[in-house]
Length: 73
Image (cartoon, rainbow, N blue to C red; front, side, top):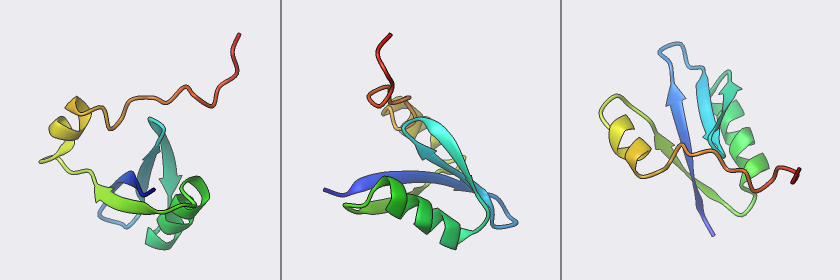
């Protein structure tokens, strides 16, 4: 199964990947790909977050926090 890996890239080439609703900083595209392989070993598709698509992605739940890996209290 292929998952979407949402990311925002700055002009200098670094940025943030959104993993389970939490930001993961990366320094370059190669590091982003490593993050993708670590969190989505079964495959992923890169989806760049821009000012034009942020509202639509947010409304679709793309940035909602995933609590499934947290311990129950």
